[in-house]
Image (cartoon, rainbow, N blue to C red; front, side, top):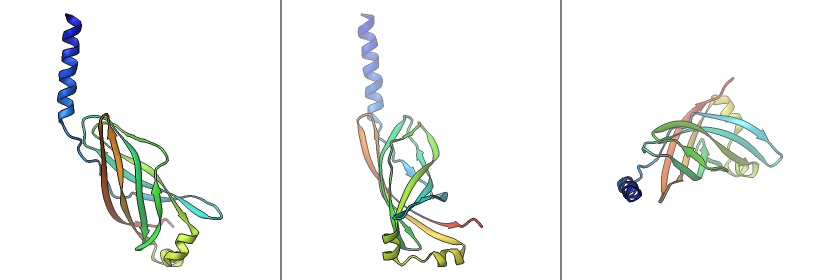
Length: 152
């Protein structure tokens, strides 16, 4: 009898939790852009972006697909290589990898001299991230713009 009450209580709790829909995850303004490495074909950058989970339960960001634009020219694509676990009610900064191929830079007409001369660059991120929690899965679109100052 005690086992039945325990299972019944567990089912009621799970049912109540399942009724609340997944609140959208919020992607904040980019914080920092750092050079991670250079190869003969591409530039690897690390981009610091805050991601906020307003839900009372932990969720996972299973996929990030975005395009980065520097000074209104396409710079490259962002994709995560690992699952990001967001604790309940959290607001944390996460490192995203941005891989920019030299061919993309040449096609876009992006001038490194212009960026150095201005001492800043306008960064725009457009894309979406896929979040998942238990039975829920949701795509969250985002667009963020920020002017980043270059460190001397």
